[in-house]
Length: 440
Image (cartoon, rainbow, N blue to C red; front, side, top):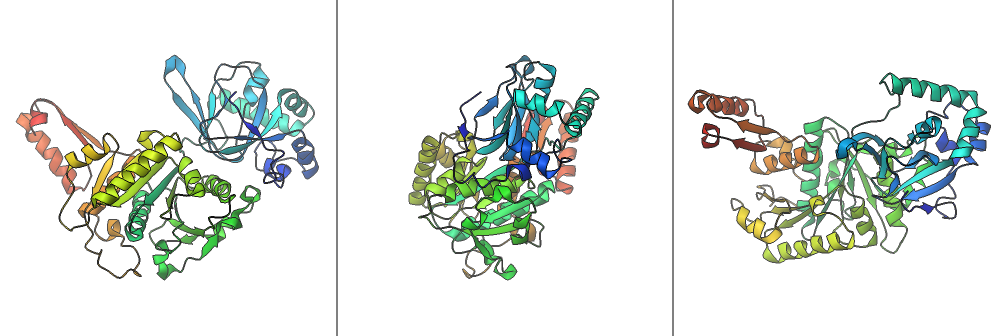
């Protein structure tokens, strides 16, 4: 087991109602309040940071766990090939089967974000099962489902991804990129997307026509105790179909970084993609948020000074937060309409880091008070829209590849395939070929 922090003495977590949170777990949902209270007194809150491991595959079982807040990944590595078994969120539980069968853990459980668990030690778990028929029956059903290959619990193989967007210059382009990315992810995947606007000037509310109210981040203090979905009442639904939550915070409040993490974990319960439009500053709270992100997009323009500044910011964050290079991408919003930064220039500046060029928008000279343009909806075939849609497919792991082989009627069949794809407006992200396929 990797290192973890006991949260029982943390003032922030002392207000958490452990009994109420246990009621969200299918294993305990049929118990009375007094039964939940008694079991919760045997459990302790433990905190795991992103990438820390709760337990490894093959080690003996020591405890049973219930997820209070955060995201976890359960995986197995038969023949050293990693296989994702499940993504776990609030209300999910794990570790019970190894204790019941007295066998080593069959999977490794790793935190995907700073997370909070309720832990029940092995002996207390066994006593709880022995003395409570409701729990024993639920575990029997669970074991039967596993043996029959039908796990009835709502574990999903769809993970929740947090995408942060940061810019060191004009906020309008950052807001435009964020809202177009949210719209494109919703369109490409048909899954739930929420856009968090942290811009103090409310450019996303440049959705101003939708009059989304900005909420203080402190309002989400102890959001772990929200069992009735109060946050949903603070969301604004965009006509395209994704949701928007607009928040602000005071830099002097040192607790905001922790609240941000809890808010992201809460939204991850119901949303596949969480897009965060960050303010144009790097403080402790924003650094904390970036450390919890699965993807970070740095938006800049083609001005060499701004490009150099964003390169240095990305390198600094990568070092300070110990984030992998694959998490970062650069988006250059071209300053002059019709002129694009060359691929070789981008590669020379950023190396292997993904770098995208967004053509200057024809709407860039509009009033600053106007809402960000939704180009992916208004003009989906524009160069700007095609790049955004490609980024959305990359984030959602839905890239389209085309392999052209040899023969095939001297390449005429390949040409026919390409024409059909073009006619049906099916984008191709990656293309390869051999022999005549390479020539085509």
